[in-house]
Length: 490
Image (tube, helix red, strand yellow):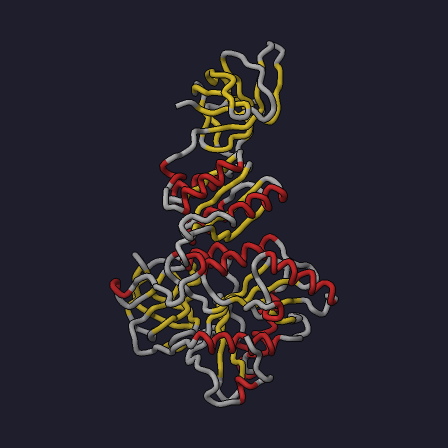
């Protein structure tokens, strides 16, 4: 994207085509300066005469960039990555642009990688703000840009399409250029100021106030909301009693691209809900430009592995899979157990979570069952690739070919009685007292038996679940070895 001359956007009347304010979400690692950046923009860009009014946080606010065209930008005050995805999942493409804040002196961190995945899933244009530039040297910047390339975020200077702006949220360096770039990207989006159409807004924050009752912060996407209007958000309805601006002022109406706090719902509406003036007006949005996660019929995969080496090997193999010109969108790859956040991202993108030799956290398995998300961890790489190949071709193997409950032997203990206990980690499903099991050594079946004892610590249990570690006693006795697999027989 070519950069305009400084302030050209704000001095050339009629230059931009974005008739309504762009809605911008700020994403990034927890301590890379998102809040400081937002605070600096808010304090320096809101008119001085109104500065005293910035006392009430409603989760979003609007700033004037300046110039003869009076451009405004609406910032969402950093919803968590999962909330951002949940909005997209419900059809609420609330943000037009995502700004990824990366500390130039610290580099790409796990939450940075997650933020990139969520921005891609939402299908919004990305701008990178390299923050803390006052603390970083040239070598730091080079290192960070290299890390971002590995995550598929390539700057314009490197031949990619993502604008990189160096900023300091502490001194203000580069912030005018960042705001200008947001304006340029908004121009390309050609956002329309649709005031005289049916209302469509998105709940970005909601709470129950002891004094005022249910309160919800909305961003208006199209149409106009006025005091006295009926409002519907899913099963929650009401009538607008008051509209409160981001400056804490009562207003009579609000239009597209603007945040507002609404008093009048009968109950607290869920975050991400679509708001309309009638039940029939509440519908999911079909974005004109489909996000990466919905393009080309590729398989969206969130990948977890036990080690960095395994992760790189499996991800490389997945990226090379092709079935009838379809392949894999590897939205997120990381080391560690499969957790709730992985399942939520898969739900948002209609994808699956695949693991290699790593456990599934019990709460994640329950969430996957509740959301209908395919989740499975494989101890052997070719089994994972085989399942991925079937999934690319359209088979729902994670549902139709659910793997039998399975545990991996981590250690072996001999009791005073002479009984041999297998210390195991459950890889998937549940292993129950009195289950019939078989023991696999590699691909060879070496034993069959029945579970006659399950213990965690000193307590006996009737069952153990995915991700748990336990001692397993099998009858008849057997000389287990490390890395054996105990599989429940059908």
